[in-house]
Length: 181
Image (cartoon, rainbow, N blue to C red):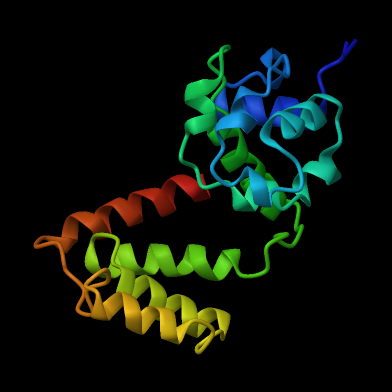
């Protein structure tokens, strides 16, 4: 039986107001997770490790980086735990404690995603893919697949822009200010 609250549990609760101890290991989160096949620890196992104070195991796992933040786990949780929010907090804690991401190109993808939104105001596959390929230095990995997707109209080669991008700039500025405080 778990008795004392671990350091990482306290940190997660302070950031998300979620109580990892409410997880009773029903495994519904793992059963519904669309990327569980690639994870080294399933979502319920992450919650268990958090409760046991296994900080390093959790913060160096690939699971927290592979989480798609689709919130399927959170919706399926019978105790209403926002597991996707916990995963997000764990990624932040991992970076703050200077653990390298377990998935080597995840930071390049993250930066590409944000740069695309910052620049165009919305998600755009051509911008996301272009910036990601440059940052990850994986320029030719799947060029054939990309060409097929463009040919079939699955990816539009020209990005679309939001009309008033000043709103997007204000959002990014406000978010940057909140992160510093």
